[in-house]
Image 1 (cartoon, rainbow, N blue to C red):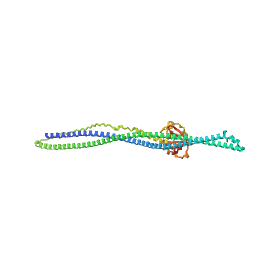
Image 2 (image 1 turned 180 degrees about the vertical axis):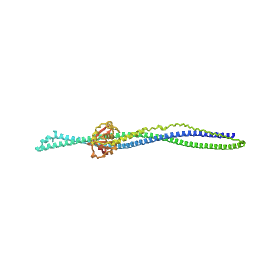
Image 3 (image 1 turned 180 degrees about the horizontal axis):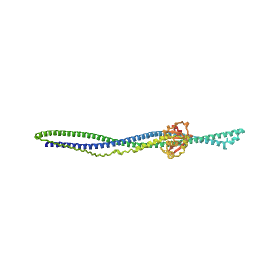
Image 4 (image 1 turned 45 degrees about the vertical axis):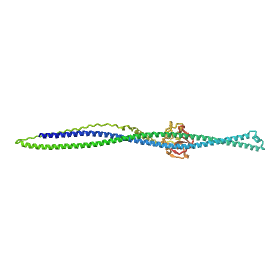
Length: 462
């Protein structure tokens, strides 16, 4: 009997020990899994943040690349316009050389004719010659003869006078032509200088934008590296959680097997002990009531506690900020909406009104990229600002202005028409003259020969 009780207590102790082991293992597994889940969740949150940053960086890169492409296109167009201007300057120089030669020739003929005239006048009208004017009259055989001689002298004088006047007019015209061609050459050279300045500015802007793109490339590479690290962390913790869960399940199964084996052994022992007691009782007890009491107490306590300590990890991805990008996007959207509204406004006015209004700003400064009629504008900015006064929205581009409104020929030109050259635009004001933002040295001015350089298009808005 004592032996049976001892065996029962031992089995109970084994069961309680197994329960404690299972509880302890569960606590360890729970802590490990909790930590792994916490680290995985943090890595997933960081990965989402970095992916957002990557998306923003790529969006900014795309926008920046569009700006660089536009600058490249403008630079190519500027270089082409410089080349065209160089050819036009060479042509103007040849024209100026020809006019200078014509002037020299006209002046020479004028001097020769003047000398001849003086010589003839002196010969005919000054005494001392055998056939002087008075001697010719005295030598006349009749009144009719004298009259003929007087008419001859008058004819010679009139011829000399008209010929000299013709040469003087030719000289004046050639001098005026030289002055005009010289001014046109100077205007072309000014425009060439402006285009060279624009070319330099565009190159600088492209260099700056390219450097900015390089910075974005570095930021993108760093963000992608962080994303790869966070992905690796997520995969690592996912695998660790799976391993811990599998280990926990295996340990639980093993302990369950041990408990089942112990319970089975206890049941077998109890059965054997009961059988032995029954046999002993029947042999020692006669004629008396047998009282058999059994008390079985099986207690088990299990407490499961879990405490998890989250490991902090620094998120390098927080170094990026995309607020500027969203602000820029909002600003761009507002600007686009404003432009669309302006384009849809109803145009009013007439070509003559446009020409009259534009002439009010003659003498104001030229500023590349400007659109202010008072503080400064470039050629296309000037045209755009003038027409904006009449409710018409035009592009700030000399190239794009070639396609606004509708085309007219030079013979149909009217005040207010837009005259387009390679890399330059002006407003026709009538009488062969134009008003335009010519160059930094001359500002907004009137030129009296619209065809001072090759015209590529004439566009009418009204």
